[in-house]
Image 1 (cartoon, helix red, strand yellow):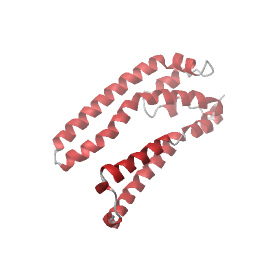
Image 2: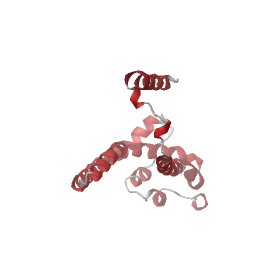
Image 3: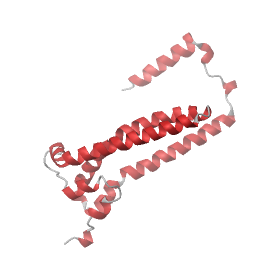
Length: 178
């Protein structure tokens, strides 16, 4: 709708032109070396995003190829549901990067180690609890979610909590199907 853009432009105009004109960026303060370093770091993050996009969004094509197009919805809905088990960990970890960087700059490695291990332990505990809960409700929930059109099998539900097993236990390539 453009509302966010208009609010940001109005905010920038008020800050730079009225409230704190001394903060207005000046061309004289631009350093080519810094711009190149920022561009290089930014391009690395961009490539990571592209790789994540390809990795996490191409599974429907793989499922369609090996298990058949009719099984895509079953796998996709199950994958989406179990993805919520790691959502809190994924959301919180990004915010800790800045804190880790600041602590490392202050040479407070003990805090980084303690916080990392606490975050990792809490994340694993929550994920295990969430996966067990989701495994218990997955079939009726997905059936309700999809209006009864899709009900994943117990074998498919049972393989999601064990990374790396779905491909071996649930996929039956077309050429091996009876």
